[in-house]
Amino acid sequence: MTYDFDHMIDDPFALLPPSARRTEDMSEGDVLFRQDQSTSGLYLVVEGGVSLRRTSLGGDILNLHKAVSGGYFAEASIFSDRYHCDAICTESGTVMKISKTAVIDMMQLNRLFSEGLTGLLAVQVQQYRAQIEILAIRSAKERVLAAVQAGYLDAKVTDLASRINLTHEACYRALRALCDDKRMAQIGRGEYRLL
Image (cartoon, rainbow, N blue to C red):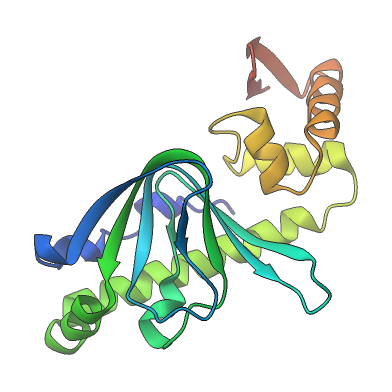
């Protein structure tokens, strides 16, 4: 069964006063927050990309999540005193910061907002579970096919590769193999469609 995650619920944050939502331009490499910094809000990527990273005890950088246009991140900050990772801009664009205080206040005052926020978080859990299933596919070709079927190829092929933990070379090879198998067709530079 396929779910249309983007159209299941309305945006609960539209119920917040405009002063609770502030847009910020960002450049590649900008840091929105650091691990252990006091939380002040969650974010929506309006345009661009943000990587959530944590440094392991051994010093390795772990990429926890990549938020792209239309994606929320740092939702756990609503219920936490400190951010659990770093948020680094991976491409220039715009983010919207949503005030933690305003979210908590609205949750206590407005049942529709609370239900909408809960619904949004539930949909995200479903999306993360679907992504884990895709990442568990061992064959690069089948992983790419599953990701395209899930709607992950909505930008550059390199973004798709990063999202599904493949090198961009492996992703391009898989796309070419899927086209050779007549399961997909290339319709333009970096543009593919399912057959």
